[in-house]
Length: 454
Image 1 (cartoon, rainbow, N blue to C red):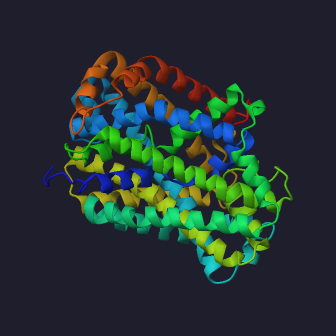
Image 2 (cartoon, rainbow, N blue to C red; image 1 turned 90 degrees about the vertical axis):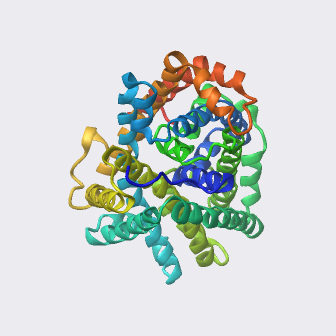
Image 3 (cartoon, helix red, strand yellow; image 1 turned 180 degrees about the vertical axis):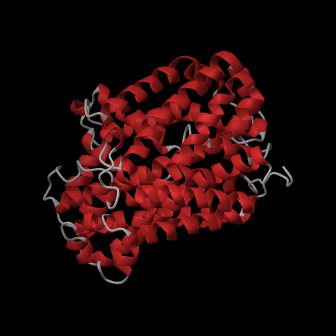
């Protein structure tokens, strides 16, 4: 490369940027749904237990690979073992696939935020509004264009001036807004306390194998694993920073945001549905763009709360999209030797073209249903999240455990403050993680095919 590699200024910048990547739409529209479905406090307990074992192992491994090699996914695997360079190429596909369609959803978020700002909350809460909006041709493209342009602008500014500065502002604001909405909802909506009890009071009768499988899957997707993101961010990490301590802080932030999302959404939806669980059983766009606007429409000051909610979701979405684009830009810079600006513009152009395909998948191309799935966006989501990511993570864990050997990663982890969890790491990476990842791969495919429901 013709320019020196960027880096985060310190531990706080790295942690907030990595947490910003991990905290995304999955925390807000999938975690509350799963927590409601699998017993509230029981699901929370299992999720936390997996976060400090399974999630911790995969996260420190990816960051260590990045810092040790100083390269993004493709170059990192090649440098460690040329036989496994194909894993880096597969990993690089993930952000390239996810960024475009994720930015389409980000555009929907910007649309809803602007709608609440101009006083269209009641209109957006009406039946059929969301379906009518995404089935238009031009408008979804415009909002998608706004979102991905904002993402590209931050990436062009670079690691320190762009990603780190944005994360340092957006992540704390995200926490404050979520706390405010949760407290306001519980204090002002009749019946919301029933949702709090349901979410926090353990009911051991609801524990099952599917509770563990669902928690594993949510944790895996939530922490930005197997996307090349954490390898890229690790390559920007200074040697004097402890990876182990940083990962603990990332986990606290990510799990805390997911917990707050549940505390914010479940009581509100319980109150809206008069204590029932039917509305909470909805996840994804249906929960965020259809159910929640109806909830806000029944709340005192609902227009303000709706605007705050969607600006919060915007912060969560754009910090994730920034990390996705940065990963792809880093790969282009590493492989082609390009500088940041032309690499960023090239990635922006390709992402805009691919994202337009997903945006139009609800209108002019609504008849296109790859693999029999409902639309083009869902197809890209299925291929990346349900197939490629578990495969990459499985190959990575097997590579570290039986080819590279855990000792190589441990040596990197011991730089900058030691590594207290080396025994846990060895056991998890050799024996537990591969089994868990096969379970995630199988269950996610079966879920997508409708054989099981997660």
